[in-house]
Length: 75
Image (tube, rainbow, N blue to C red; front, side, top):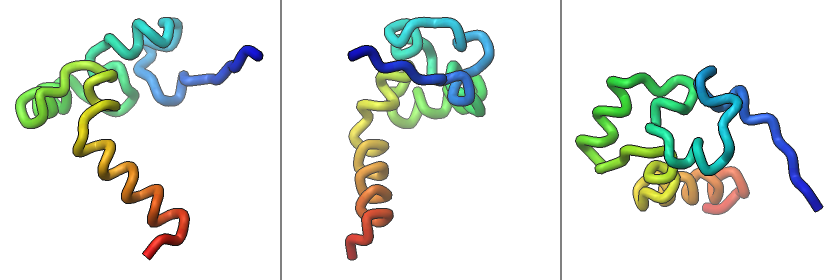
């Protein structure tokens, strides 16, 4: 079963027509709302250079897990 989704709201205009693989390998500034300056700070602080790096970063994954627990009603 094929799955389709519209990622345009999540991406910078220049990346809206790219494949998932191209997006994952793109700089984090490919994400809507992430500036080149933000990308430099992420690279400096966390060695995050690509969208893939951001998604796999242990600190961001931990924060996302804590938020999910909170939203699920965990105490």
